[in-house]
Length: 106
Image (spheres, one colour):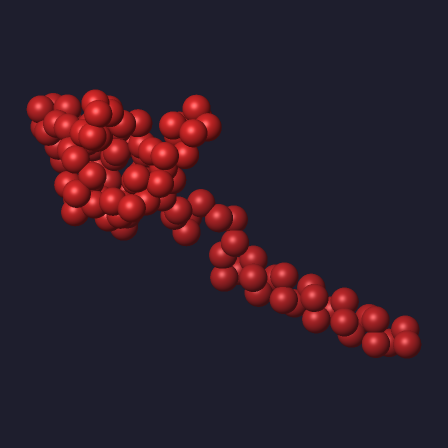
């Protein structure tokens, strides 16, 4: 099961829709305060933090497709790690073997 947001579930006009921070929070779980913090850092540093946004005075909008892409790129998936139960067991066995060898030398 994938936790990624499937862009195919949206119609073209839905992907182009502009969302305000409250809508982004409700739909994607990115808190309004976090979005605000990212916008402030972006303005201060000149380097984009968070999803790309449109700002006109006090109005901040996010295109749904851009938010989906942002979330999908930063979402952690357990399948992305090379560690499995087998590699953990192998590593534990190797560590125990090293401890035994060390104790024998002492």
